[in-house]
Length: 593
Image 1 (cartoon, rainbow, N blue to C red):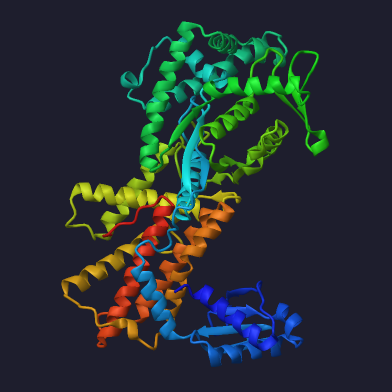
Image 2 (cartoon, rainbow, N blue to C red; image 1 turned 90 degrees about the horizontal axis):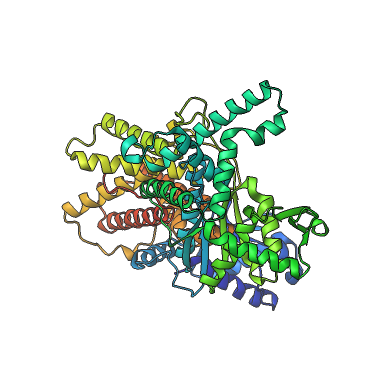
């Protein structure tokens, strides 16, 4: 039974009988915790058809429902708000429906498709803390859309060309070391990132030397030998010089191997990879067509621009004077290529930090000007930066927090705490490692996902991994506790006592069932708002409510077999929904902990 839908039908019947008019649109919301009830009908809008005050209108509807609806057991009126209490036997029926529905909360395939982009790194350095929030957000949004019935295409654009890539290549060549991941013992992305840092150090030293010799700083930035070497590499790459392309492929290959290991540990994957080196040419062709059509214009130096001042923005360069592409050019080509590859998609979701909000406003507007109607279907999932408490985590390069380092430290801390709790004496070393991985990464993912994506957030590693509080491990522990309880019941050979006929419940039992019924709606709400935080916070509230129930209501001590088995069924339903909700977010929950 869908209690919300059933209640709305009963309210419609009431208004038809009482006021000779059926209302289609009205508001039913959760009851304020300080009042008795679970559902509240806002009666102020009904006064238009009742021609009575809001309080009298609420009483009339309440009296009708109490007399004529099997759903309602009592009501109270607070001003124009009708607070309704649902009959306990109805809550029992609702739980029965949840228990019997093996796909509870998962919508049937709708035939709709959507694309979600996330990660989208540069191939000149390893992934960092910002990429963790990006990947976890994108992967969770994809999971949410799959749960509400969409076919989801998970993709990324790899920024594999440009001057930043050539900087790492230049530093590697000039070092003369000929290091490889095998010879250095470093992951490929870390090795290339090392040379990107080396480039910066060398570049600053050479600029200082030129400035000390009397060269203006602006000129020194262009004339530093290492920068000239990088620019020369870029030019050679653009001209398809064989040696330069071979080096580019080799170093990018190292990075891809490194990324693959990081993604595997993150628990994220992709259906299709797009590469800037393969999409920028399509973007350039589109820009040149736009010039011919008068959508874009050339300046005297030959560069191509779009004028968006009439749209409240500004002018934006699309091709440089030398004909080379900018990021916008690549993104134009990528967007077009994706809709060609997946013509059925309802839209694209770009998971990119909020510092790029202006960029995406411009991109979507340009695509619209180029005549692509699907530009309206593109959405920028903008998220805030992640800060860390000072000194909490080491940084490989001194400026950013390396994703591999952070994940390793979270798993190590999880293992330390697990061993200190002393609950794994019978577990093998492999089981301890698996559990530590699950807890450490679960803590990291959950903490980054529980905050609204639009907000800048502070990630506190120590807080995130606690077993108590608003954390992933608290939810994981609740699931493991319930599974242990169910294993105990099975070992005791407890048989069903026919709990579906129960007529009375405890308030804490009603609260847990009410939360269980909210799961499908929370998924839809999360999808509509592109916000995994909705699901993350819902699962936490469910786990917290269950723990309050568990601590106050006996299960195995209960002498009434029907009540005992009802509580076991309720526990199983909670564990199942916790597992489903966390899985949607990309977080695993343990059977034992």
